[in-house]
Length: 428
Ligand code: HAM
Image: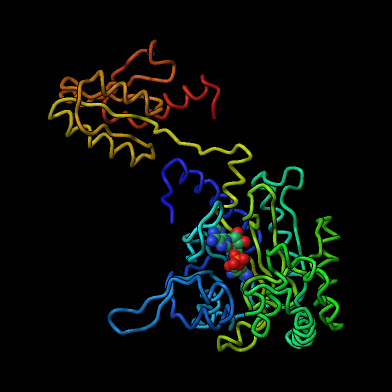
């Protein structure tokens, strides 16, 4: 779990601004769910025999009433819970998004943290392949908006998990196949053989790759409707000229998916290369007690995307204040407070010097702050209800002329001065 220090937090804010504009452009509205939910919600939604539920959840008992609670490991379960609790599908389909920390007790490594952040997108009440394809296209646009996909460095992989009857037939075939090759299975695969054999296909064990390659493919068990849906998604991706690869072994680590699943993967981040993943989960709403409603969504890992962003050379922008206010003496100090608040009322950003010190040392801080202007208040200014203004940006060694401006005119005059300095500097 990481602290995010100011320089990095500024980069997060820049990222979040781009993300908010992007979501608005696709008609998604924000939703904020609590970070803690009753444990059974996750077991029911994500699946009891998944890595997340079996070993990665931060669960605890409420000391007051003994209720079993869990820090959310992902957002989809909470989002669907909230949608049902507030009867939100009553008015029709919903496009929703959320952003925030998720918690998984995994072994930390580059790009994998125990508290990480996701931007999650969920569309509820839509059944056709159009929404799946639009969500995929949406991701592609975000990579462009962020300037990330130079040379196609983020690849799209898709698959179809079909419907549960199709998965059941595939599962039977898969178990029969793996049983024939029992001696080649590692301990984890042995354990999963009868509980979650599909996940064996996801193994990272090099010794099992050949076995898994030759295993029965779920795609060969899909019925006409599932194939039609998958082809519908692909047709839109082709129409949009979005390159993709079908990865028959893409199974995802959460049990709620059916039909379309997808992942965006990069080679630039080492082992943790999946920056965004999701798919359709038509059964989840009913499974959590709602009237059946189809749904599709995805979530991206903010830390991973920011690592890519920094890799592309993006840096945080620290916005300097418009003015730095230096002051000395008791009357000057009290007047300085009034001046600073009045200027903030007028929309300026003002860094009020706190902590005393000589004018010289305060002026050094003013220059270092990056402010356009130093405002100076000494005993003379305080007595005259005026402020001395010294433009800073022409260089601290050759400061521009200093002028004294009365308090009443200060906000108007300051605007003119800053505007003319920005013109001179060619900025803005
Ligand atoms: P997920 O694949 O578990 O899906 O997580 C989505 C993304 O979150 C991953 O692709 C990765 O970028 C990031 N992520 C996951 N775990 C970590 C970690 N420990 N450290 C850093 N980043 C991580 C879900 O969570 C689904 N709820 C997505 C979804 C939404 N499906 C439908 N709607």
